[in-house]
Image (cartoon, rainbow, N blue to C red; front, side, top):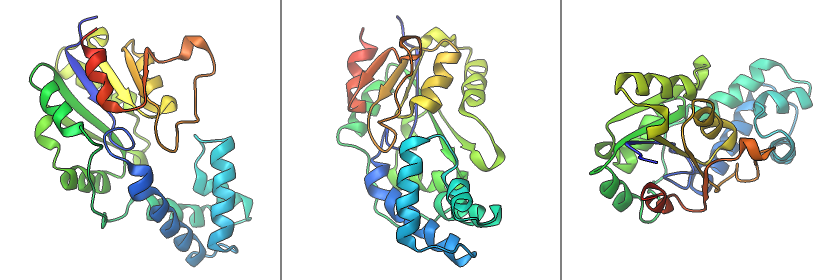
Length: 224
């Protein structure tokens, strides 16, 4: 396998989003939903969210919380906006060794970053981390417009004349970028870390080509 390019996810792949941002963002989302009319406490929201996420991790958790408490979709939208479209106030840093890994890999591979969420918030993360110079291109997939990573992958392959077999897809969500990469015929590397680490392939055919616990381990994958 000759890898010419690598597509990276951002959250819980290059940075520890679960520990640095997620809980605070969920607290703000619960407050926003309550302010919008949700008849529940922040603790109620927290408990329901944990159970929903455990059973249905790919579901829109804010719609599910609103439905659980009999609230409107407008309440759900308030939570969604508060969680995804927030200003980044926290001090961010990449996982240990990530910058050195990117510096090493970008000298021999075309690196791309494809991150999904609300573009302005995702851009704030990229800026805070200072990682833009490592990437040939950064694509921010707008979930509020129902954009998908698979489409971004296709556009990058077409733009840079890449074959799927030459592009390694790296991310922490099996049910998102890994499945998208596999559907296109890309070799995939699943970083089993963060709040989605319990979401695993349902069959051997769906399994990623490689599984690592730390993203820096992909250097070894690229040398295979």
